[in-house]
Amino acid sequence: RVTSAGQALVVLAAARAAAQGKSLQEVRQAADAVVQHMHLFFAVDTLEYLHRGGRIGGASRYLGTVLNIKPILYFDLDGKLDALERARTKGKALQRLTALAEEKANGHPLHLGVIHANAPQIAQDFRDQITRHLQCKEVFTLELSPVIGVHVGPGTIGIALYAEN
Image 1 (cartoon, rainbow, N blue to C red):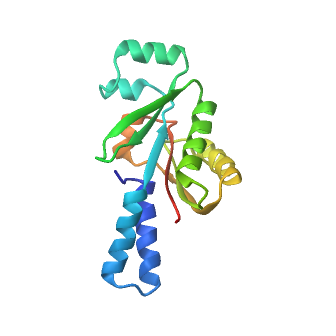
Image 2 (image 1 turned 90 degrees about the vertical axis):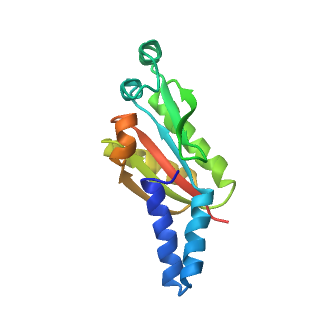
């Protein structure tokens, strides 16, 4: 459920608690609180790797490619990568990621990690766009871990976030 930039956000929260002189139990509670409120979303650029991994069939891959479909995936509460919805273009998929972040922020500042699979410039542009649109208390960019990258392929852009409350 928490991987890649999500793990980084947990570690940063624990480090902040430790730097404030909190006890080991309080540091753990700070980390656990972040895990409980963490959200991870990914906009997949190519359907090839979802097909290779058996997540979609050949016909879905073909039609999705022809129609320029960009699936938006998320980690459910059990840590399973699952489909949330589909967008028609990469731009619309990134707009939807921004909207999802705004929904999860619910008016609060965000702790945000932007994740990419071999797409550093797209990730930087997306980071610039999302930070102009939303209030972020902390934001960073990381390359997607191979554990997820093998399933979603190059060009994927994701976000890991939790709202400050």
